[in-house]
Image (cartoon, rainbow, N blue to C red; front, side, top):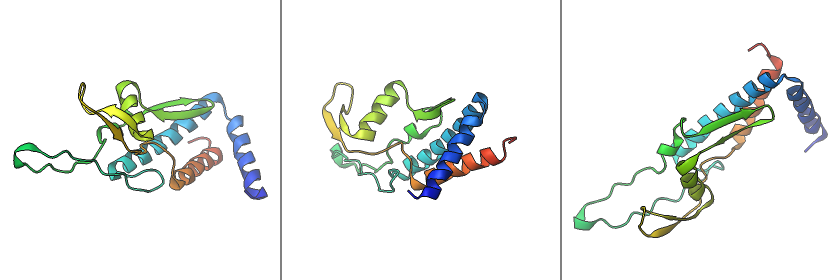
Length: 153
């Protein structure tokens, strides 16, 4: 990083720390909402935060000659009510809870899981559901700068 960028980051950090705790929570909640929207769009497009497409689902052969239709994966996990936001005075987090967290973790990091409750296990490839892209980082910078320059909004 250049010296100018380091000074800029220091100024932003000082500006955030100068905000009251409720204003900081509000700022972090706005950032988390924007990042959640971005991750929802990526899940719909079936791509990772770095822009690579997910490895397609492997379809088992259907019995009786029926053709199985290719469906998009994990569309249920893109719902806002499942992507939980926790905003605090020192930052924000986006994630899943309970059974959804287990399913998301298997896909986020790749791993073994049961296909059905007592069925066979399968190795799932890495399909990053959550993450930050370069566009997300730019959007976060814009939100922070807007919040610091227009504190009444």
